[in-house]
Length: 63
Image (cartoon, rainbow, N blue to C red; front, side, top):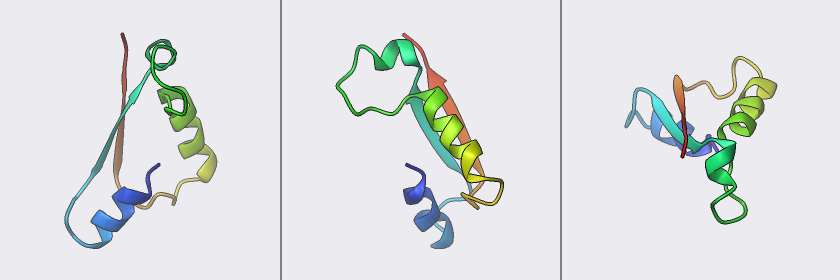
């Protein structure tokens, strides 16, 4: 999910990555396969401190 930020960050196109993710309540109303905030945050924390090496803002959007 955050791989695209790395390419733009390394290419000096962006200074920070911003990821807008639906909260679980909103994701339930969307098509299947859409990542949601809690899962995205968990994946990010599980990867560790250095991955992604891009400064990142993750925002959860509710219904």
